[in-house]
Amino acid sequence: MTGKQQPRLEAAGITKMFGGIRALNDISLEVLPKQIVGIIGPNGAGKTTTFNVITGAYRPSTGEVRLDGKAVTAEPSHLIARAGISRTFQNIRLFGDMTVWEHLLVAQPHSDFTLRRLLPTRWADPQAFRRAEEILEFLKLADVKDRIARSLPYGIQRRVEIARAISARPKLLLLDEPVAGMNHDEADDIRRLILTLRDSGLSILLIDHDMAFVMNLCDYLYVLDFGVMIAQGRPDQIRSNPVVLDAYLGHAT
Image: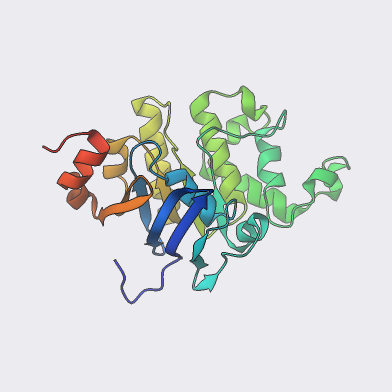
């Protein structure tokens, strides 16, 4: 996968131990600029642990994470986020009784909206307002901007979570099971949104159990099983790989 282009993200030789348990064993992967990369594997394979290492929630036992060639392994999660890595979670995590609009304001870099929301509107940062308006239009959320985010239908809540993540102006967006629990139409809506985000310049790394969704979306795939990288390649290569089929589906055909 390595070429002349510098990767947006590099994870090199990542091992993560929890006591005597080796959750990740010498994992290496990369994501290029404007590329959609997927991590797949059965439950317990180490996918979310990989995300947690990349975002600084976990410190790797060995190995290094680099963003645009700069090591961020030792940085706390809030500085990694500020450097340009945003994520969503498998279980949607929206803020209390905040509106969609408020979610987009509070997530912006160097935002002090948590204080400014208590002041008259005229004190608000006009640049933050413009950015929030752009994202509302881009993600087709303008009609619900004044609704409490957690009161919205599930598919729209997921869209709000993605909107909040890109409000931070990331270089790399990590999506943890973005279509979990969605019907076909909702999942296709998210698929088209992810493609639009990629076309706008974002690099995207995602996890999902929906194989059809992953195969039809990603440019490149990594396959984990029990914390070990067992395969990597284009979707067409992974689809026919007997080792992957045996690990992920329980049989080789």
